[in-house]
Image 1 (tube, chains in turn green, brown):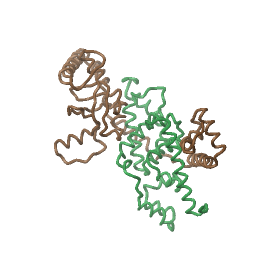
Image 2 (cartoon, each protein chain N blue to C red):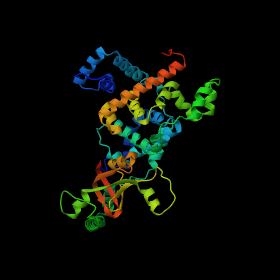
Image 3 (spheres, rainbow over the protein chains, first blue to last red):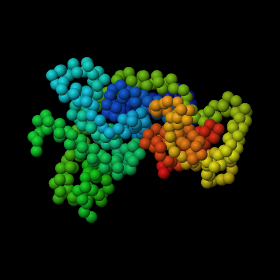
Image 4 (cartoon, chains in turn red, cyan):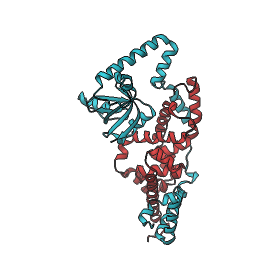
Length: 194
Length: 217
């Protein structure tokens, strides 16, 4: 309904109050989706602009967080459609950087790859690598459930799939993550090869 | 009922998260009791969940990002909303506004009635106005900009600023009004080139449809 708030200023203030309560969660998810600080900020701004544009369509009293996360996933899919459709490709420059650069100190690495700095701080390297190996569909449910704490019903709503699909994707995603993490641990000698 | 390991393994997430019903819960618990392989998988589910939910992995957004976003929000033009537009017209110029609304509705209704008869089916009433308000049409989701550029034989690349719309059987393109439903429809990339049935309100003179409901066929 137009005119829920009397003036544009009131409308903006109401939006600011309710929407920025979720900025931290949105930013962290955006970061893990785009894997890059600059893209994450761009995505975040897009999400807020869209949410603001459709703010009058949001029904007060319903779940704002789920609503704005739905905008986040839709915006992401829209922008990175190409990337999602392509099969996961190994980024060779990154692989070399993360494995062949052990002699350099962390700070030196940060200087040469500034974009990745904050993102690297976010995760222990191995968790980040493991998440990167998941397909978008699997990564999305893990991010929403295990990191942002949404219920299955909310996730189903956000990604537009039935709860059963959320459940099986989640089960498989965690299983895959475990495989990747175990592989890493083996490589580093934490666990012995069986 | 005894479930197989395969059936169980897709539900272990729900089991661990407390997201399944009592019957399935008992079924799985009984299976786990006798199946060490699935117990391993259950532990995996718990372990990975625990690793990921570590709050230390979170990152604070850059301190100035909120201010930057709000500046962008303030620069936004007021969103296009047919209702708001009409309302604003009425506030300033009630009489001419009323007259023009009558004329616009009348004209569009006539156009829809004469020009759009083949395109729309209507299931509620026979009045021309009802055709506008509860139209239903079938078409393919396409990128309007790419299609138009294609027609004019201009070299083009699809980009994210392009608008998705609908191409009906008769070859007409329809823009989708950016309401929450419309934005959902036009922002979901995987609907591209799918045939859908759209229900909603139409603005024939603008070739615009306000989607209230859509189904993929």
